Image (cartoon, rainbow, N blue to C red):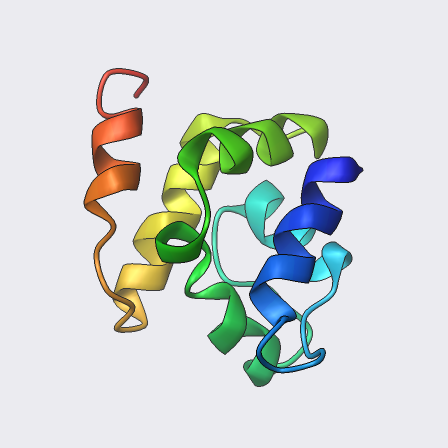
Length: 96
């Protein structure tokens, strides 16, 4: 899954690990932070700030998910005090 590898590599670059592709895919599919560790969830909570929305949507589709589930994950990150992503919100506004 090329987009999951790209996103995960980008998100873990400052930490040297802590998040797996499986954590990202699982979270996109269930629509909430569902990584295997709290550290992974913390890293994943910046997905929508650090990643272009087109790449997130591509990853969701490759994972067998969809934009709606990805947006549910975004809302889950907000519930965990992550910053809003105007870029994500603008990109999906007309898709939902």
